Length: 363
Ligand SMILES: *Cc1c(COP(=O)(O)O)cnc(C)c1O
Image (cartoon, rainbow, N blue to C red; front, side):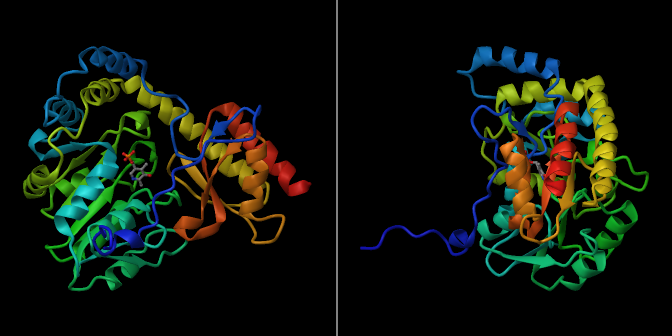
């Protein structure tokens, strides 16, 4: 007798490999591999989390209504159009399960966030990648890949791991080129960090369309990655569909409490933005000055490309940095074997990365 076999597609998935966090023993480790905030979570969020820990025996409120009310208040949204999840990863998976099945296609850009491919294959559907231009999503290339089987289009804006973004005009042009039965998923995990006048996270497009959703996360600027918390805004019909298939208690009480406090702590968010503005610019400038190729980023991380020569490659640089406790992200799985992704860290780590890469390049 043969054993149980998963549905087709499942075994074609390469499991997501999170950013590593180890270095040689005795060396201080700087984890710059997962785009976590160097400022940590808001003290108010931590206090709310601890207080919620007093009632671990009770099931959480199942619709995240207090958290939805807080998000709705902050962004001027209708709480009925919001859905919360265990990280935006859960929401991306729910979207795939609700809207994709065998024979359907989901479209994303070549170096788009890996979860899109995983969620698509897990739903039994076919992932389709469109080429990028200058490591940036290309609206014409995406539209050229739309077929009558296309059901979902995922767009990380800004994108991880490249750090590039599409201006609002381009997102609107993408949307205008999609049939009304295709759902456009805008993943704005890094929206708070973006300082570009022509950027729009998706709030406006969601408000004016029946086939657009936007996902946001508490993992990045709010520093709650460990709690698993994300939210989505979309048309009532989409929210209603996902509410049918999600777990009944998909968000924990401590996560909701921390999320409400985090969203209320605007000073903490402002401090994180200010830190990122300063050090993202500094890192891009210093790394470029070292002769490395830096893709202009609007997120809290930057993609650095290396020549594919033995001794100077991204792989060699990664090994050199890791020896010094500097843990960056290899992005081979994104089809970018000649680059590393570096998260903007605390000042000490940022300076150490630049010093260490200088040493690597001149040794
Ligand atoms: C980090 C990240 C997320 C957020 O994931 P969570 O599950 O909310 O932690 C979503 N999309 C992109 C592009 C990301 O980089």
